[in-house]
Image (cartoon, rainbow, N blue to C red):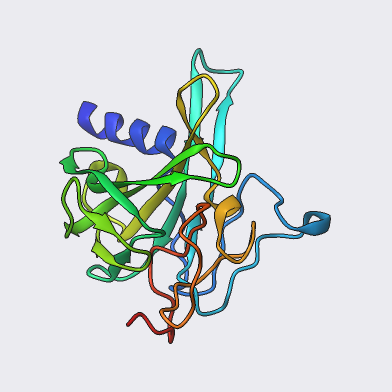
Amino acid sequence: MAAGLLLAALLLFSGCVGPSRQLYGSLAPGADNLRPAGRPVFMPENAPSISQGYTPVSRDPGLYFSRKSHEGLDIIGKAGTPVLAPAAGVVIHSYYEPLSGNNVGIDHGRDGNGRWIKSGLFHLDQRLVKVGDRVVRGQQIGTLGRTGLLAAGLPHVHYNIQVKSPAGRFEYVNPHRFWADGAGVVTCFDSRKQWPDQPFTATCPVPCRGVARQ
């Protein structure tokens, strides 16, 4: 009983559980309006669905602590689907952790404002890279899964981005701000296209339907 309550609390405060949705083209609401006139994020019909959007740390007046709503995007798919590097970089961690499961972190260098930036991908079924590996955009780094308690048994990858603040701390930011085709425009990886490695921009870490990866 106590274990069940603990798990429920972890899921509530992690926010890493979204409603079941179609596999492609569905977009959960998030925190920011990133396109002109406050229009919603543009989601291609063939892009893998995002079941949970980014919402920053907030304070609930009824609680005695800050509530971390959801510090990334949950991208759903079938277990075993390739997970891709969102941009070029160096693998800085690759390990299993009980809550986030198999996860990989990539150092991407700097963004357009000169801030150091890194990404994390959680709940992988398999990890195919190790610390120190150099990866290129679109390279397969693992497979989508449901590992870790916070996956709640739902196949998806939790994708987050952190930037280094002037105070020297890494802070979570909305991944929708960094798509290669522009802020708020979900960008499919396509091997026929080229995007610069610097400054950092991202392509979707789960393949889009009908788009070339090789």
